[in-house]
Image 1 (spheres, each protein chain N blue to C red):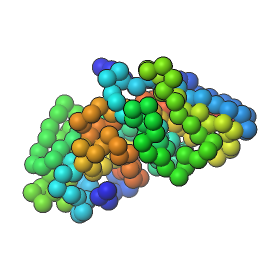
Image 2 (tube, rainbow over the protein chains, first blue to last red):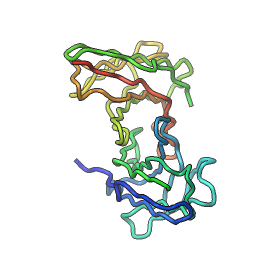
Image 3 (cartoon, one colour):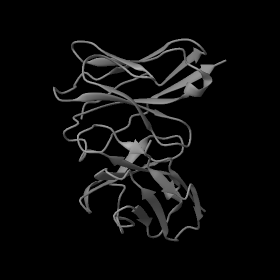
Length: 113
Length: 113
């Protein structure tokens, strides 16, 4: 069964450093998302991406965040200058047209020290 | 988006049937009901989706009464590996590509040997 893959599974970084989280969505899906989940809290929407541009973003997704689909298969989330409060699980999801189902990756655990 | 309400937690013994009910009083005509499962440190995983009456797949059944103001996820004969958080979401699949999923706190199911 096709799946969304995310790398790395765990990323440790120092506060103020840039990180890039990578995702390979399911190949025929058209819509892509990033969510995050702080330990013990709800899954929160960050940003959605369609047709090579951001279609919606939450208030969490400030100027420190950016997304890119550099080569038609990878989908990346960049945090320019990480803060302690960015420590969380980050999930990528993709969505095929015509279904109300999003397929999630296993996530990247980001630890900011 | 229709607001959903579900129990915070439930406990069950192995081998029992578990029913988790979700209330969605403001569900719209075109909304579908979708359930996701999330294991610790993993992304949410689609379980089942329905519009009305009953839907069954290899994992679960979903019961939706005629007024559609609630739904019940039924897990037959649970095992320890069914211990997870279960989320009920409501949305219109025609818009879902452009609409992020809004997760509540879900129902934390603990299966006991």
